[in-house]
Image (cartoon, rainbow, N blue to C red; front, side, top):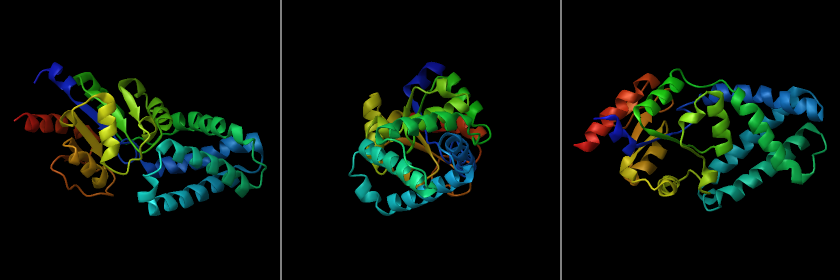
Length: 253
């Protein structure tokens, strides 16, 4: 198989559990939230960290319980509501008067731009593997539930942003990552035959969504949270390039 053939295929990286360790990332976010807000708005850094933690815990529980209803709402409208609540509820928790509402988005994305490149939570071998796949000729994208601005920041911090063709977050297709429609819209946006897609995720649920569209899938089992249940899987990132080539050879038979 020559290098040119590989341009027929696109590889889609999930983020949390595949490129980055969510546990480590969460710890670092808590500290940096305090470091950002305290000098600007007063009160102790730990109060802002607490406020962020409490909000995210409550919001995530609410979202998971209402997942079917959530996916009926356009993602970008949902995200605007998330930003408004994040700012207002954190300031209320800390006991500081909130800024003007028309500044909420500006503040939020300033936080994203300040924190995400400074997070150090990538799994061993991820950056080198991304570079290797790119150098082999693959087109590389993200396909994650995080906003594209967050994804760009994390990848910038990992020094691999330039190896990605685009950064799918749900905001780019205005669709939650809650059904096969998420992948369907991504493939349509790119103009890609799903049979030329290779989707990487740790969560079997999302891989099943992709398989419904006849996309190829590789389960990434780096954390032990999910056991391997697909034919193609890896338990360390260094094995991904070989697993990708093995999958393609099987597809071409």
